[in-house]
Image 1 (cartoon, rainbow, N blue to C red):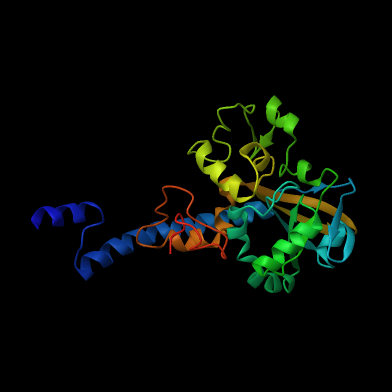
Image 2: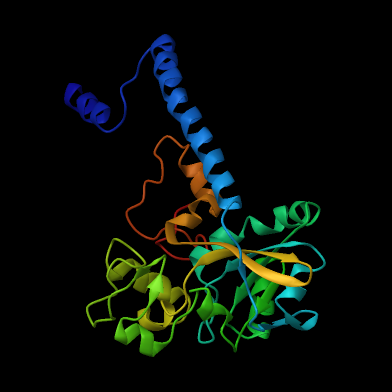
Length: 275
């Protein structure tokens, strides 16, 4: 019995009195408050970034018809775009992007009443996006950008040629050329395996799947001119991924060894899904 107790204790923090816990908690609170102050400072610096005027004409397919980038603002002065990984060849949206997007519906109305429009943009045809929205019970704006340069100009899509030549800039760095052995650490630090698993969930292979990339971009409309203000990618999206904010506060944290999440209507349908 003693050996079992020792093993159990080795796998989690020690059990202490309430007074000892409170002392440790107050020490951690100092670090949390410092992080909050640092986060406030970073938010201020984001808002102080210079703007880039966009003179290129971008067109989108929306539920309301053909639209310009200015039209996506829907009469507001600010636009936040989530670059949702749903390529033309995908049979379903990326499950990771889908997990992030689960939080969009509840906040759209609040943002709209604070002069901010939130919209997803993908390269898949509008009909595919509409069908997927219906399946997932989503109502937030989602525009299709099947042609043109929008996704490429904002580093959310790349061509097969770029992939093979190593001329891809993602997350503000140049990626290595595609090789048969994998994709380096551009999308994961665990090698190709987990990415292949997610790719299969979109009905594609790794090469096709990774020609789309996740990200978010901010824009402002002033005097009829659209300006680009901010973009972030990769781990920069963690703060938008609601389930991770909760898991980071759970006793065991993220506790991940592989790709465990599913689209919300898929849990329990395979042995890999956790209940």
